[in-house]
Length: 409
Image 1 (cartoon, helix red, strand yellow):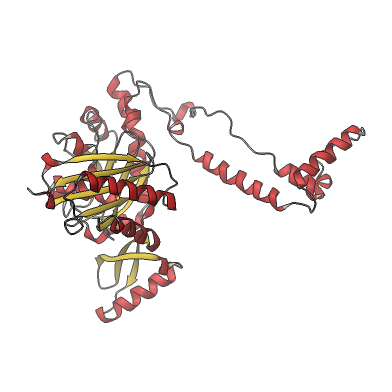
Image 2: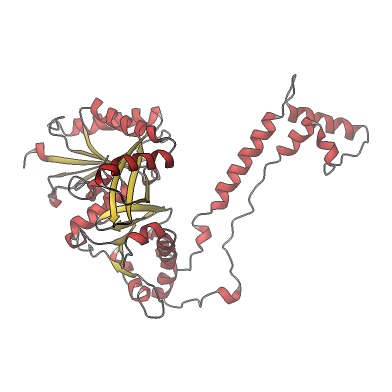
């Protein structure tokens, strides 16, 4: 095959600070190639796009016959860059449908003019119509198109990683093309959950941990993998710093002045009672109080009450299953917390993409005593090359013009 049929998927991975270039001649698996480039800038600021532009130039130089006219570029953005939603509208005639849809979107999204929105019907009857949408910021989309075209590489498609992972699953198992299911794509240090209805991705969710924690020989505590309280504390401290900054006096900083006032009082033998509310009527004193930054105690594994604890397994498979139950919990919670999606179609199977060495967990997951309403099964691509199984979203990006086109921008 000529180089003119080269297809490339460019993925942005902020968790690893990487640009990934995944290419193939047509859909030939033997020609797959993966190249990564690191970046240092903050995500989507000016420096970020300058670094991306430099990486694009390097990639084009490494493929000298890669001309703009022959380029077939798909750009994958992180899942959090795209918002998905669904809502019901009353059943109306086709002539009134478009106007009602526009009015509904205007009332739901105040920044509608800043968004590029894909709208498509996912369910319909005489009483109502269920509309699903996917949205991305116009500014981000235009910035990506601009940096690609500047380097003579024209992006045909922009989509999100969760959608591309579903494309990869469908490309490897065409029977899933019109099926409703949940896809759990487990990578080494991160994972994603995608909700699919009749072959179309309607929602996704990221998890900040992957199969590396399944290699543990001991039970893993979920709160040691990540902790929302750290984010809550950061917000709390930011608010307190902002309040302290607002309480400044002309001629000097209030906090510094408060320190001097306290020092003078102590030097004169006066008692300083910081619990006295009247003491802090003075703005300087109040600022000093607000500058006391809260800190988290040392992170420790969560210990449940004895009656809530499960028996500790003694064999390796048992420990593996207990650790995988963290994934299981998040998948089932994702399904339970999205009644709008389950109302459209209830998934019967959760397909899991992870290394084959963990396949023993499926016997536990689907046992009678587990009682799950959905079945967990391997995606069944273990025989494929690692460049495919470990990069399902990149491989699926090659099929963005074939599957799941409703989520393309």
